[in-house]
Length: 173
Ligand SMILES: [Zn+2]
Image (cartoon, rainbow, N blue to C red; front, side, top):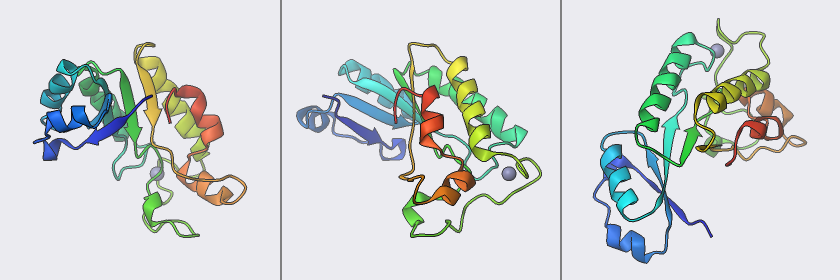
């Protein structure tokens, strides 16, 4: 069974013996210094290593600057030799933790890059590009918002996360 913990590099003083004793066999490491040190420590303990990158931060996923940023982050993540790469915030803004019934206040509003585009389609294209740009043996995952198509169709089109369509490019959710 997989038992994973998320490691925040800014809290890097982990008690590794405690992690071993907890029975975990996998870590997800946020890509911030000293992620490399954490990856090496985890590798020495034979933990499976995943690296998590913040896909777009507050930028539009279709802004060309976002694409270059994502490309650069993937490059940095690959240097840590992970078995899995996790795309965090792989959506058009918004925090699902703030969701009640309506659209989140911090969702991404249409801009020059994404106006009149199909956000689901565009995220699928980006996911396909990521999948094709990393080695097939590396698993790709994303953090999925808990959205249900029949209950919240407007959320899916606004945030762009249609899991049924998106998951074709991923091994992990
Ligand atoms: Zn936009």
